[in-house]
Length: 172
Image 1 (cartoon, rainbow, N blue to C red):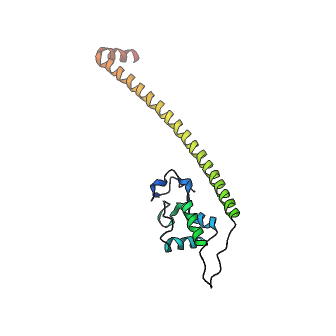
Image 2: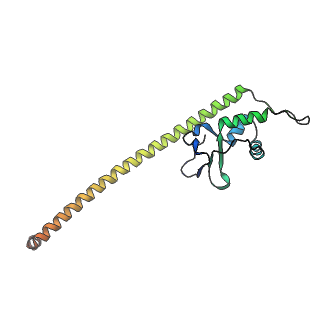
Image 3: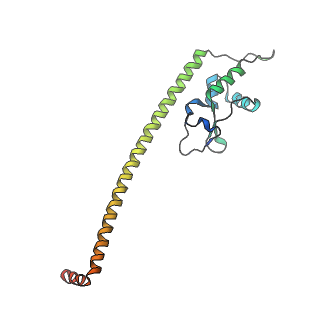
């Protein structure tokens, strides 16, 4: 499943699938997996009340991507593709199960590559964040130490006003 990045809007309609994103498939990928067009899947979703319920929406506005559970989608697609056709309609093209499995394996490999790249980018971002945090913590400690030194110096000057006058004369 293509995982949304930080700039996309994400809406969970079936929160029980959070953390189980690997079980989801977007409708376009599902269409490709079972060998039908995206418009056929769109028609199925509009016309059949038993079409799998949308789990996740990603993206903004009209460009939202819909995700459904892969197993539910495959079960629904098999039932649609195995329906008896009328006399005027040719049978739907059948793709061998081996072809479907090979495409599923290729899809999983692409997802692993993409997620591995994402993991590397996130690891680099985390390393940069940790370096910046360390730097700013050190700056904070230096600033606190300097402030404490200045407060101590001011108290010392306030405790002995004559010392400040002597200090000015010796410098001047």
